[in-house]
Structure formats: structure tokens, C-alpha cells
Length: 79
Image 1 (cartoon, rainbow, N blue to C red):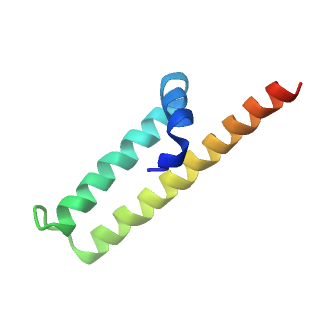
Image 2 (cartoon, rainbow, N blue to C red; image 1 turned 60 degrees about the vertical axis):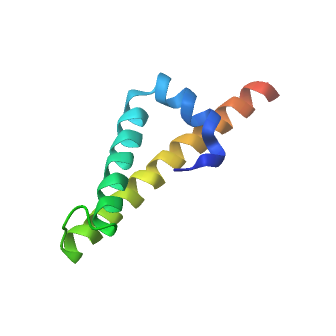
């Protein structure tokens, strides 16, 4: 998830427990989705759709946190 922000993700996972939690939850849902798509786990279409929507919400929340962190770091450099 969001590989282009690898450095920021590493820092935020260490410094922000909420970020670490949503990042881990996203990864867990991603694994469930992968298992379902590859036939290792049975989910109804509705269950899979719900998981995909939750993953997207978590990704959006993580991205917002990353962008805020990045802006704050840039503001520090410019101060």
C-alpha cells in the first residue's frame, strides 16, 4: 500500500499508533481479499465488497495522514 511513501510510512508506523493500527488493519483485509480471490477463503460477493470498501477507506485515511506529515516536514524545512 502506497509504496511511493515508504519512508513516511516507516516513520509514521513508529511515531503514530493510530496510523500503525489502520496500516495493519488494511494489510489484514488485503490478505483476506487475496485469499478469497485465490480460492483459499470463501466470501460472499457482499462480504468481499464490504472488505474492499473498508480497505479503500483505510487507505484514504492513511494517505491523508502521510500527506499531512509530509507537509509538516516541508514546513519545518522552510521555516
